[in-house]
Image 1 (spheres, rainbow, N blue to C red):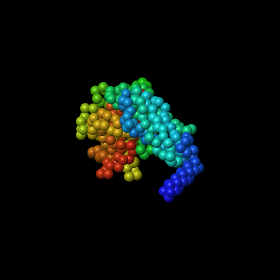
Image 2 (cartoon, rainbow, N blue to C red):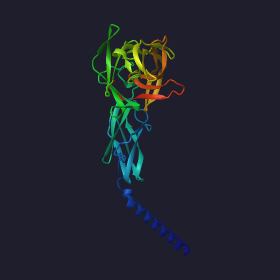
Image 3 (cartoon, helix red, strand yellow):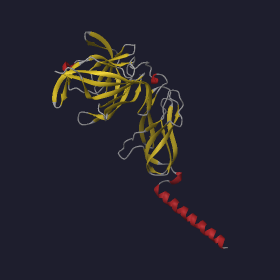
Length: 360
């Protein structure tokens, strides 16, 4: 008899405990039977950057390694479904139960297979909120580009770049990224009485680069002996430009060449001094792979640009304390430029890294 009473007592205790727990959940949200509410936006109504995982290759079915991590702020518990639209043959989705209110990270699993190479924008939805993220698909040949060399020239094709740190802009704002777009037509320029036709790349921040190729593995730029999209000298006398080789496929690692020179002015120790400036370009790597902002690019040539300056009155050129490594992927062109101090520390001053591309 005592055993039965003891069992009944435990049963009553358990029932009371469950009732208490159920009551506590019901005060916080709809409980296990409801639908979760929340937002993809943070407290400042801003979308947090999604984290892209996996490699995305043309016509290859997505696997468990292809997913996207998104930030969600749940305001009530319950069942949820978070999904994207279908873009380029792919979509991302996850459903489950939100047990915890507040900030959470949700893994959206990838489905389908990419149809075309390039960078595509996905829209992710939850409740009344919407955010966006980009995914770059590469191809088996030339990284998916229609170009079979290191200088695409298809009009309206573009490359998006990320700037680290962001460029300062007029008015104190910052420029964290920019787009470089291929213009239609050719642009003739004259250097040393010879006229050459160039493809023009223009940016949405007011820069332009003139490039050409000879079809035999050499690539030329009509510009100044500096870095791409980053200018070092305080003045180029008479605003002159020169035609110089910036990439030579025939060069092996360790081989280098010097460009022609232009007369420039540079602020050295607070004084504007003049002299002749040129570049020394050394091949560092050929056929390498680089993972850049989550996307793996192949068949890359990396070169080093050294700034050489011969001041008036000097007899030899001397290197400046800045140099850069520029990496070019086949089918794409410039995918990364890292400007750094030419000291033992090699501190990075500025990086320009590909974020995505289309139409190349």
